[in-house]
Amino acid sequence: MYGPTHHGWIEVVVGPMYSGKSEELIRRTKRAKIAKQKVLVFKPAIDNRYSVDEVVSHSGQKNDAILIEKACEILGHVDMDTEVVAIDEVQFLDKEVVNVARQLANKGLRVIAAGLDMDFRGEPFGPTPELLAIAEFVDKITAVCMICGDPAHRTQRLINGKPAGYDEPTILVGATESYEARCRLHHEVPR
Ligand code: ADP
Image (cartoon, rainbow, N blue to C red):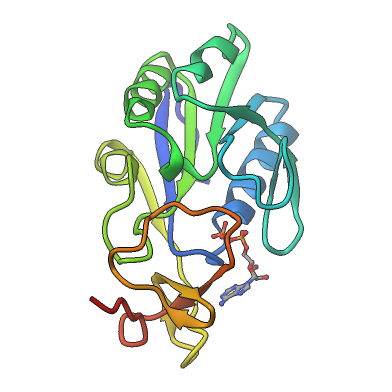
């Protein structure tokens, strides 16, 4: 997609929930596999939304994935033949993922990282900002605002249907909460 190169690089796909980050990661890794490249897909063990060892998009597309607790585990799975390393939900990994991505790209691998750039408060999320800074290629994609239909860059967290307050914890997987894509105007974070 970015033209042929003979060295490694980092590409990052960010956006709010439902913007199609997982779909895009799956699309890119499928194309690499068509080109007969050895691809490894990783995701943090914390994201068990739909499937344990697969990346699954909200629209149901799937790709096998290796579950990891810590970013440094990625290096243990990469061998001489690996050409592409893809990481989904990268915001949930520790900051070491930045060094891991840098190391792999320096060795000549293509690194694809997809994840949330902002948390539900609209603030930079985990290691994503640093990855954005060191990446060669960045795609910031949008969802559809569930209030007005404009492009949505933010993720609205709802608890019992009401906007979650600023002080609620950032990570709370599987609770009685829900998320919506929203534009800046309709993104609410009560203090
Ligand atoms: P992400 O990984 O960014 O959360 P996914 O790739 O899992 O996104 O899912 C993207 C899909 O979510 C879209 O193709 C569409 O089918 C669905 N979807 C649900 N709600 C929305 C929304 N508000 N805006 C855009 N797509 C949405």
